[in-house]
Length: 411
Image 1 (cartoon, rainbow, N blue to C red):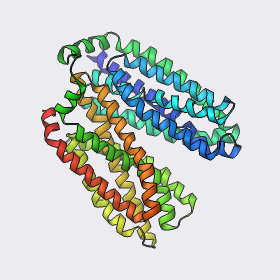
Image 2: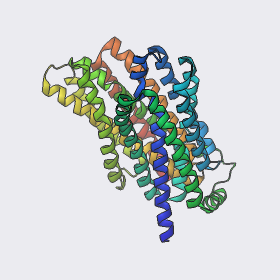
Image 3: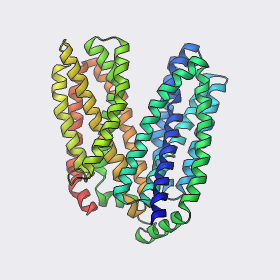
Image 4: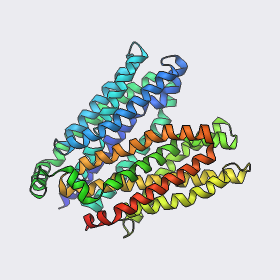
């Protein structure tokens, strides 16, 4: 029993390190893009296409990764993802022209998609649901810490060498972590992985339709909730600096400081929602997300009223309201993307569900990038915040629709 306890901790630690490396190698281009533009290595419009290519292939790859994650060994999928990502990071600095960066970074997006659904399966197969939720918190925090580390490391690296060094460093890091992860997982899991899958085959036959499982669990409305969450989370994170600068006439440096503060709020929100998830109310992911959507609506109302008020106190209040709404969306993300897929471990489809959930997140994120741009351009930022209220209201309705059937599934 003691040996299994330590092996479970090792599994969580290995998944956290692998996801840390995944985020590090995923965000390299975004972090050094300014330097690449300054050096003439890439043009602005091509840089936008490169970033979009990763975004699209990552979202689409979640569906494929989720399907494969329930049928193939997850540790080998994760190892493959890290190795392919390492190659992509190696190629970017040495490619002869910027156009070749587009397909290479698209492949990196797909490689990155091979991480999360297999992590869901590994954790859900080997941990109780309560420990699975805690493990997800640790793994997710690892991703946020990776982002902060990269934003600190990259400027130092560039000041002494060049932006190319950041990609080369990411390559070496991914290879080292990938090898350590695979060898360690083979040792830690041993025969447990095979034995667990044999038990799942008995409790959930392979011919059980995933669509029937979705229908019986009542998760189709929850997928709509996830799209709403993705829209709001990535929309606020992506557009808040611009909103802050334009709505309150602030300079760009102050707006950048605003964007740096958001990862800190996201980490705080994760620990907060983990505590309340232990209670009866938020232990149901549909109900918990519905409550978070409703709270966000209440916060957006004064935000919409104060957004054009030219006073320091109004600017500070709006900034805090936006940060708390974003924190609520990160909390909802934890419930719907991290906790919910683990509920399907008994059906043997946790990885597939994780892939669908993550894909829905990026549908919402894609809609937010274009939708918020259009609304803010034509109607202004107050109308944009009002549109957030309407979208959050839809999310609350979908959560209410899913609640009864999903509750029966949990019971």
